[in-house]
Image (tube, rainbow, N blue to C red):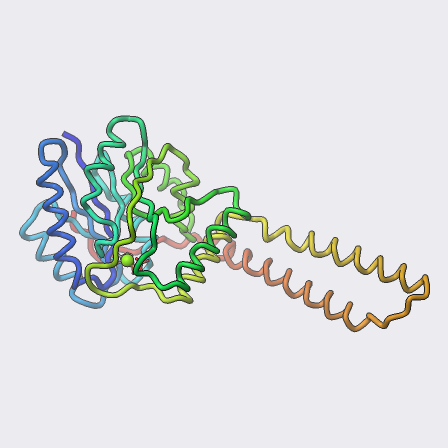
Length: 302
Ligand code: UDP
Ligand code: MG
């Protein structure tokens, strides 16, 4: 029988964890003729009761495994740790807050097990319940990213991914520290089926994302997969040089506006901007070359 590992990163999820676990059990029961389950929770340095809930669940249910991080390393590190320790033939990565409804798992399993797809994911076709500002910026992110980056992202696609073991291994091959999982899932390729659904709000607890946090995450995503901004200085330099040339010619022809000041400002601004772009990439390189571990586990219960 096939074994499905559910990988769920959890950070301060004590309110929602019991609801999520109950729903997983219901789905496992529903699929019991076809597949067995392993539930692998990653406690990402939670400071509430998440870890003790996991300990209790494990005592009652041998399907429950967990990895507890020594501190908060972020959801991306949690996904990495989960993929590394998953024993299943199929692995499903999902949030613990019910925004990725476990009820989708049977449909995702059908799509992948048929051999037609290597991966099944969900795509939100509406963003109801989300603040308009957040939706606007999310749209903007997809536009900018898809214009700049060779790795195209599907708008609304989520990190709710049911994948074959082979795809999970490919994801692990990308051992970079700046892990923008949305991009990584696309970069490795494979055939993905998207199931569409309306946005679901979290069942309990609070989102860990602030607006600024999300903005920073979007910039990380673009830096991680696109080198186009590095070429911006070249473009800007060429435009400024051409503009300067035209002005010099105008001056020689006697059209005498004093543009020196404006030119200095423009050139100075462009130089600073370009340095900033270089700095952004160099900071990423700096972190990569350190080769620090992606996460540190305090406790592994498998
Ligand atoms: N999460 C995590 N580490 C973090 C932040 C979040 O493991 O540092 C987990 C969280 O417990 C949840 C999932 O990642 O299972 C998605 O987080 P959240 O619901 O806060 O994000 P949103 O859905 O608002 O984008
Ligand atoms: Mg959520």
